[in-house]
Length: 109
Length: 114
Image (cartoon, rainbow over all chains, first blue to last red; front, side):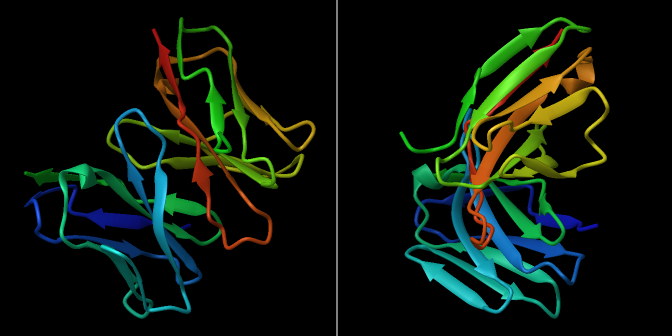
């Protein structure tokens, strides 16, 4: 089955800096890669996704890149703000959806 | 509110008791998923429904767990003879059949087994 590894587990940046979170997956048949943001006491919120026929996707301050050959995908957040502080999860869908263990992002004002 | 809703939000129960959780998906969504999330981990897939049919179950779903979606709308997840290891957040998500797998999560039910 699919195995998703996510790094780093914690990330602290200064407000205005960029943050990058990286994930790798094992199942070459995976074709859909969403990213979720989870705030304390809430369910995960879909923030951006990418499909296997696309290499990069951008939505305002958030971008995701996918390297299918290397089975890597990454989340990039630019101009970080304190409200970006949360736990971020990557996921990959093969037979089912598998999630990474999460990255706790802290943006210091 | 047109999002996924879950009830109750919190449940404390004693070991050995049965508990039942409810999920109401986004109204036009055909697919409904159950996940379990423990502290410091991502959600783990348990099972999913397409309309009223339960199409897949994870090996994580022991015989004590049962899920239903009788009319293809809301779903229930029941845990019988709860154990302390069942303590977790139980998340429900829904998506459109034919959609590109975007799953939208509810707020979860936090279960504590004492």
